[in-house]
Image (cartoon, rainbow, N blue to C red):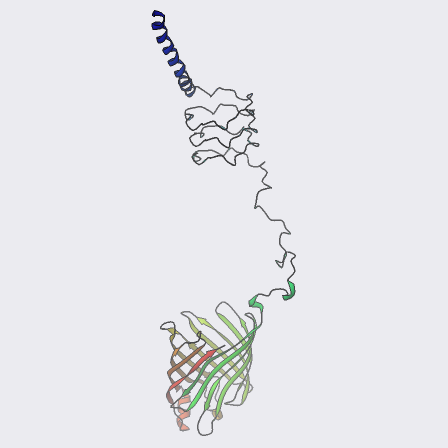
Length: 370
């Protein structure tokens, strides 16, 4: 009986010491100084690290700056299951570590702090990145026509829309003036590209009473852009009012504040020079209703009494139209008021011939393009 009384406490104390020994070893390892440890000769290739849980290891106080790991062979180590989210490696010296054979594909580094990692001393010059996607393309990577050797098929080589010859018709004015009993018209047609065109343009009036006289000025010209907002024109023209032909040159485009502006000069066969100036603005009220004010000014270089022309400015015209755009804005009927007056010596010449100096009229018509 006495033996058992003595043996039981001894056995209990022994068991308690055995249970506490792993905890004592773990505590002893956390305070170990790894700074002077030489691990260059250690072979860890056969070690199974798959089940190692290093997340709870306190390595933040460990001094890894002097650890020599240059000789460690980690090529066969399985790091796929290593949990390194809690490890602090900011002070570790990785410059001499050979990790070429390590499989980093499944490593979880989401919890690592890369903010304090110093990579300024890393040598990237000898890194082979030839297998990585991207980089500089070879000189023959793309053919000049972007076909890459693929045939175009039965439709032939594609052509950019801007280089195709196209055509268009624009009727800017086709209306009737009630007070003057005449039809006014202005249209231009063109054929060509965005860089070169041939343009046919005509404007004038047709009298609907008495002798039904037709006054028109028609030109055939070559059109070419001069800048972003301006285009140049040059060609020949014919004026039915004085029955003379002329050489024409002009410029048309968009002035500041979106004012459509044009200026054309005509040199007639008798030496007379005519200058036409015009400006137009579209004041859009909403998506369909548009108010269009327009002014025109005509001047001549010398007198021509046979054709009721005086030197200087001869005529001034103004027109205001209210249009309603419909059918994809290609058709726009309008109503408006037009006004014309003679200027300078042309007023006296018209009075001498008992002609009206000023005239105004209500007008209605349509403008369209296709």
